[in-house]
Length: 401
Image 1 (cartoon, rainbow, N blue to C red):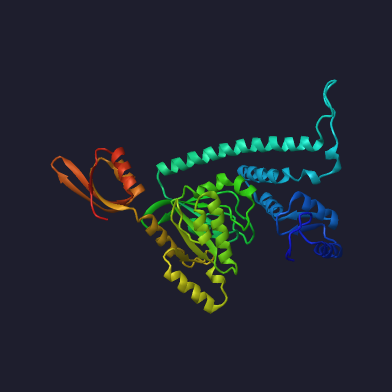
Image 2 (spheres, rainbow, N blue to C red):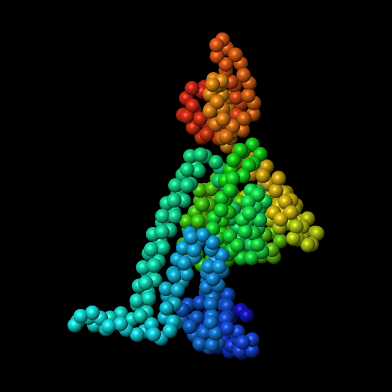
């Protein structure tokens, strides 16, 4: 049922309230979910009118998140969002909340009401959780800094909930991350090492799924988790290309990324994928679920013409090898070829080159009493600078590439 005109007291018109109330009685329903945000007064009035518990869109998402949170960090984030949501809804709780506690001493006065005490307890608990999450944020910052010093490229998966991010994550990494056909299967960020053609090691990060009108409480609470996207070298926007609302889902994801500062608001409004922090490509997933052959052919033709799109089926593995090569090409665009001369005794330097670049060739020459190694390697210029600082005895002769 759609809302024709929003009413301050009940959101719905009186006729709609009565109609839904009759359905509630007929079905003997104990819970009614409203696909919209409700003010505390609207929620309270609807519960009285329908004699049933009422939750809105935000409340439902919070309940799902509470069921899915598996780690201490995830539970803290969900609790913070839930407390923020409930803080303004104490007014509709039991009548005992309006009773006053006596003050202390002769001039203590009437004291504070139970509702004021509960609000104070919520504020105190939220403050404690925020302090704990600030520590999580600092720890994540240290981990990011450590990865940047390594440095291994970081690839972040983002996308609408149930778009297939975790299935693709498992396909690329061989991990056993929970991947089910349900909303918000992934709440806690997961990182795994992957190998790409020409890139010995990269870090793939799976993130929480987005949803349209994602409650601001959740965006705020999960900021420490979602900020992993901001430090990524490459962002993969996984889309369920078989979903009838795939374009609307894309817009919703870009809106959340704009809230985080990962893309500009203008980019989100235009529905484009350029990112101000890292390049972004779209992964059109679930191509195997498109039943209409003509529609599937049209999707494949569109993907073939767009270099920022990769077409895959994470479930069957179709297109995954091509995706890996595509990722390697993008991450390797800044890499250059270097010709390095090493002493044969510098085994650590050679091992470093193998770990941080693509060694194209190695040759050995004897020059009098010394044995020299000539190594052709493709690597990021920043890695080359780090190599020269760490192994100062090496002579770098830059070549083409």
